[in-house]
Amino acid sequence: MKLKNLFFAAAAVLGVVACQNKPSVAEGVTVDPAEITFAKEGETKEVTITTADEWKLSVPEDLSWLEISDKKGSGTTKITLKAPDNTDGYDRSGNITVKAGMYSARIKISQPGKGEKVDSPIEKLLAMEVPYDAAAKKTTPIVGAVDLTDIWWVAKFDKTGIITDGTACIVVYSKDKSIEGAVGEKGTMKGDLDNYSYHNQVINPVFTKTGTVEVNHGTALELKDQIDTYNWEGSPIIYVHVIGTAREVTSSGKQYINIFLFDNDGKQRSRDVSFASNSVDGTPYKDKDIDFYGYYVSGTNHVSVMPVGEITVKGDAAPDYKLTVSAKQTETGFEASWNEVEGADKYNWALLKGDENGTKVDGGDVTEASVSKDVEFEYGATYTVVVKALKGSEELVSANASFTARDKSNTDATTIELSFEACPEGFPSSKTLDENTYTIGGYEFTFKGAGDGNGYYWSSTNKVIIIGKKDAYIIFPSIEGKALVNVTFTTGSSASENVILDIADKDGKLYGINTEKLKKGTEYSWDVNNSAAGEKCRIVVTNAYNAQFQNLTLIYE
Image 1 (cartoon, helix red, strand yellow):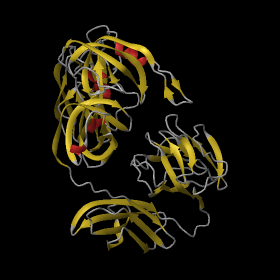
Image 2 (cartoon, helix red, strand yellow):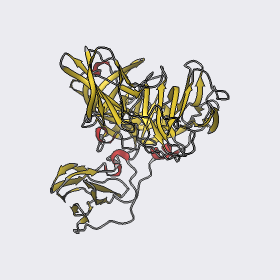
Image 3 (tube, helix red, strand yellow):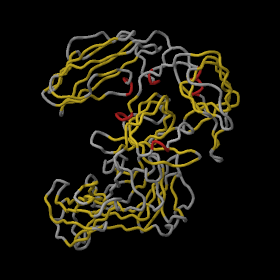
């Protein structure tokens, strides 16, 4: 039996949409046909995209089973869509969006299944609620809940692995001893049911082999393309393809490696991948470009994958040069600083009016990792500091930071400066989740922690305020007649370097000011151009990590 492709729960449809030849017409781009129904046995069809512009396809996860010959191009192009045999009980469907400039068109896709959905014993286990003791912060396993009679291994490593019943998958874990079985072996499984990282799993397993099967993993989700767009929270275990650069190695009995994925412009994705617990010794892969297939096991912003088959080393990775620049206006000019880059013997800096392609105001070479200059600014204009790390004449890496020039003599501006070297009066020093308002520095700030994190509190050890995790926030005070124009803060010296923060409006809608992971012990200064006078803004944790603040400065004008 073929696995349910990527185990996506595609929405069931009541009937089969007939194939129509009438094209989908949208000014600037058309597709023909606009609706396609594939035979349940699988088949190949063609679609003609007509446009004078460059085009790109947006394909949802529900259509991950569909093979597409080209996902971007220019001008009129004929593409091929190939659907495999749909052995599911589900009909499956979805829409492909073709984007060309400011225009778009839609291709409706559907494919019937083989009939009624077969009950899946593993899906029933996944749907069970494992009791959780909030006070003790631990689960209570359901003893004897697992009694499976027709399952087989699709991934297996010593004390952990993944089994399937042909429809869904579940992780199997043994704390004390290795588990019997190998990939492709079929049999029965008994054990208890527990929950780890939002996923139910089998513990204390007993596997009895009854035979073997030929494992068909289905179509793999390409993490390079969808790592940032796929909804990992609550995702089932799915088959994935990883292409990336293995960089950081952390030790916990074994060496666990982080694999960083990059987009076509070389920009690192907001998530990274690691080998799932106990599955692979990552040491030999450090600083290598690697390629492998496996199963997503757990995680949201940090995705854990259990490899299946060989891990291919494609070659040595390029040197990992990292450069982070911070820049801000001073009373008489500006100052910028950055981290030292290994191998660099000097740094070329330039102050530009506008963005990184703007007009040069000043610049030069320095050997230290900072620069400070007296400059007369045009108030309200944007300035960018571009820094290049050089080894001789070779550029190793470059980065930039921007700020908006303010009138330092403007007495109408309101500046709130806070230091968290000491605990603010009345602020909690133990983990708190509920939304509460505190008076700090004479102004009201509202804090809210996330249920899956540490909440918020002042740390006496690190002398910082900590908030976490995803969707935790601090609501800033409002100033009558003035809008928030700048937020500056310094991260904690022991802060996570995976956390991402952004600024949002009063309703929590993100401005998109920042999508990058923050470095520890680093000052960040963000201009806010979207806020309205008299309204409250907030700073929000946008991924599953905790943030730390040594200080906070807000400017309103």
